Length: 65
Image (tube, rainbow, N blue to C red; front, side):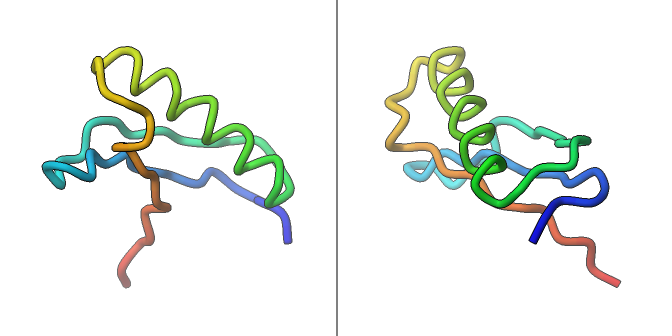
């Protein structure tokens, strides 16, 4: 399965439940490539927010219709 259009993600602080960053992937990537890219973004978000990376998780934003 590959990403075929822009997909939005949110990064969440697991300790507070707060969303701390949004990211959009506009590239066509495989599932494994998406995971690698999102882990890179997660590391940057953790550094920018002075948080351990294991307290941050990401999930896809699903459009509710």
